[in-house]
Amino acid sequence: MAGTLIFGIEGAEAAITGNLDLLGLMVLAFSTALAGGIFRDVLIGAIPPNSLRDWRYTAMAFTGAAVAFFSYRFSQGIPHELILVLDAAGLALFAVAGTEKALLYNMHPFIAVLLGTITGVGGGTVRDIFLARVPNVLRSDIYATAAMAGAAVMIAARKLKLPHTWAAVLGGVFCFTLRMVSVWRHWNLPKVMAP
Image 1 (tube, helix red, strand yellow):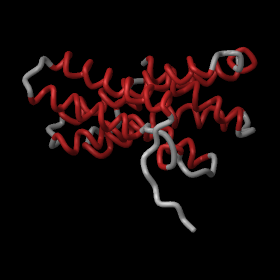
Image 2 (image 1 turned 180 degrees about the vertical axis):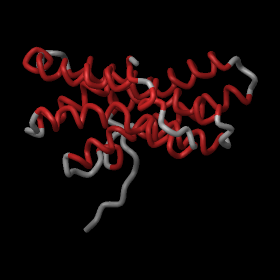
Image 3 (image 1 turned 45 degrees about the vertical axis):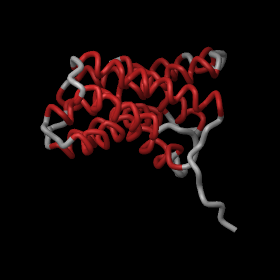
Image 4 (image 1 turned 60 degrees about the vertical axis):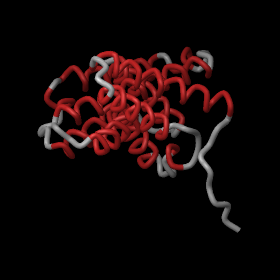
C-alpha cells in the first residue's frame, strides 16, 4: 500500500508537469501505481489482477492523486533527495512483492526475477508512454537494473535457505541501496553513441 501511494503521487505529479487535466491526472496516478502489478498478474494467470479485485489499491492510487492535486504547491518544496529516497523505497517494495507473487505461482526463478522487475517499473513505463516520451527506465539511470538485481538477490537468498522474510528484506535493501548509490555516483548502463 505504501508503494502504491508513493507511485500514485509520482504519476499525478507527472500529469501536472505534463499539463494534463484532472482526468489525466487520475489516469496517470492509477497507471503509475498499479500497471506493473496488473501486467504481472495477467502474465502469471492471476485473473482478475489483485489490484482490481481489492478496492484498497485503487483507492490508495487515487488518494495519491488527490494528495498531489490539492498540495502540489506544497509538494514542490519537498527536497528532491527525499523524493528519490521514497521512489527507491517504492521500487524495492514492488520488485520484491512482484518476485514473491511470481514464486507463489510456481514460476521459474529466472521468470520470477523478470516479473518482479516488471512489477517495479511497469507503471512508470506506462506513465511515460502516456506522456509521449521514451520511458525513463530505458534510457537513463540504474533503475530497472536495480529492481532486477534486488529480485535476483532475493531468489539467491531463498536458494541459500534463508527464511522467506529475510530473503525479501535482503532483496529489497539491495535494490534500494543500488538505486541510491547509482543516483549518488551518476551510474548509467553503457550505450552505443549514434553518429
